[in-house]
Image (tube, rainbow, N blue to C red; front, side, top):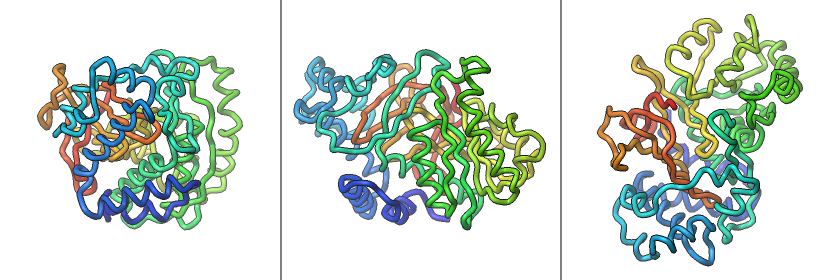
Length: 362
């Protein structure tokens, strides 16, 4: 079972990318991770993304304006020695701008961004107006490597041998990430994507309209028995597949902040299959969870996504203490810094050699 950093170095170059910039970025990441660990590389990468975003010539409108307002210069960023110091200097993003029509394009899309294919990702709208951003392919591939690394922890040496991966979930970024995951696991990807914007608050009729076509496809695959290697579901969607319908898949991946260790144990026992939790966030993509008697621990997809657990003074708490998750999304196409969800700070494990978060909740 390889560590996350090893998987980044070895597996990321084997995936297919659409354009020259993505291939160059993969090579840049791999070369850096041959010479330094992911924590060291992350600090340098974050500075690069910040400098790109505050630059008048390449930056995004939100961060260029923030730098002007706070009189932040490139030399200030270059002289910073810690991530905490950098975040305190920059301040947080304004998520409300992402609820506006074309909010990403008008406020957060860097004007120096290369011609990249972008994949939509949106919040469900349960806790307020839906927020929409876009991810490029390399961050989504890195998120897939995160999930692959966790899956190998649960089922060491797992290969799907041509079985199906049923990606029952949001359209856009989620689907592209699972297309990469299917390639890593030797599975055949099946797109079961539907629009989840505001879905939890939608009428039953509207839910059926969006979900029914993909649900029928999923049922057809599940009824064949033995042909599905991995399926993704939210906790709420499990009840849509009654009886022993899920018993014939090899791995079930469940997402949602409401998923806890008891849920995982209950479903695993009922269905007699491997059940793995996943922490999905519209901005930070997916992270595989590690279950123990105290709950579930998730690790971010560095260098593009990072979790820090902080107190009211924006200071990182001690291990084992609870605080707010400060989520930092540092990608070529987006820089977001925002407190979101509550969790306990957790140390690294045998797969991920950096901090994680335990039992995230709202």
